[in-house]
Each structure stands twice: as structure tokens, then as C-alpha cells.
Image (cartoon, rainbow, N blue to C red; front, side, top):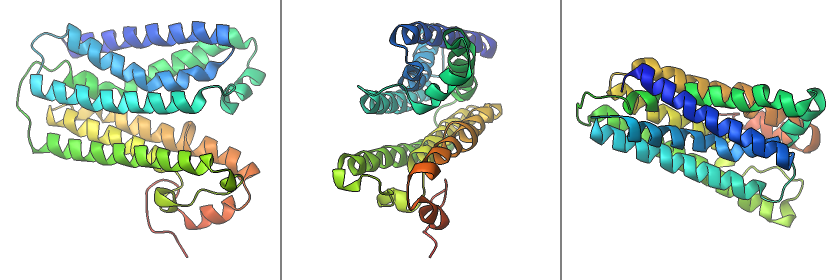
Length: 259
């Protein structure tokens, strides 16, 4: 399959999933159901490309499938469990109040937009899963796997540490500054970014250096758009002691806390 064909198939898969999710959101009156689905878009794109591609580079394609699937299923499961029984997320409630009629506006500005972003972030896996020139796994592939594994561990551990902290009633209203959260205010977002840089290194090993657009876009979104920036605007208003935590703790890249 050509790169253009892979892009077209990925676009079709993404469109079907986000439009289907939009229709369900109208019934549930909850646009935030897109969050647990988002990582599954990448999984669906990967397996669709695998199924429709002929003579794809077997070892590297299988490696990419494993990396994307493990990341996507873990993140979706985590977000599904966290959201279960909860009302619509505050971000989408704000959108609902601002954009009218929301049932119609939510399709382009929430669902289709996230589908387009997933399409662009997934460029590295599109490149690998459409590559028909088998070159064998090399040192750059394994560096990519190590970077990906580091990111996945960071993201998973950060999420679990925060879950346990919130589950303890004694911590209500307190600032989470333990474990990985002592070194970065957002270890889960940092880990998510690192995962995609690892995925890109595997694509780069196949010669798809141009797919760096994917991890760059993901990192930008996590820092400037839907991740760090948006969450901290909310936390600043309601969490006593958070300013002190911010003054000593890195926002994104882990480092020893300042005195």
C-alpha cells in the first residue's frame, strides 16, 4: 500500500469512529466519551493498515502493532474506568455552554477535530504499516522500543499513583506531590509524549523521518492545548497549596524539585 493509500484508509477509519462516537454522545448527552475512544482510534488505524497492506515489512510492522496496541488499550481502559459513572467532563460542559446548538457544533469542533488530530499524530505508524521494503530491525528500532517503554512506564505509574492518592479520603483537597509527581506536575502527560517519540524512532528506522510531525503535534497538544495548560487553569482556582507546588516542581520534563 502506498503512503497516500495508508493515509486515506487511516482517515476513513478515524472518520467512522468519531462520527459513531458523536452519535452516541447525542444519546448520552456526554461529549467527553470521546476521551476513552481517542487512543483506540490509533489501534483501529494500525490494525486496519495491517489487514489491508500487502507485503508489509513484517518484523517492524509487528513491532509497531504491539507498541500502539499496548499503549492504546491501557490508556483507554484507564480513562474508561476513571470516567465510569461520572458526569460530562468540565471541558465539554464549558464547550456546551459556549457553542450553540451544541449537538451540531460538537461534530466539527469536538469529534471531527479529534479525528483529524489522531490522523496526523498517527503518521509514524502509517509509514511503518505501509512500508513494503523489508530492511530488518536495527539499533534505531530498539532505541525506539526503549524510549516507548520508558514513556509507557512513566504514564502508567503516574496514573496509578494519582488514582491511589485520590482514593484515600484523607488526601481530599491536598496536592499530589509524591512519587513521580514530585519530579513533574504531569508525569502521565510526559510519559504519553515520550511514548510517541519512541514510536517515531521506529518509523525513522524505516526511513520515515518526515513523520516527526506526529510526536511534535502530540507533545504540543499535551503541553499547550488539552493537557498541562488547560488542567492547570482549573487546578489553580480550587487547590490550596498548588502555587507552592508549581514553584518547586517542573511542569513537564522531570527534574529534582527546587528548594
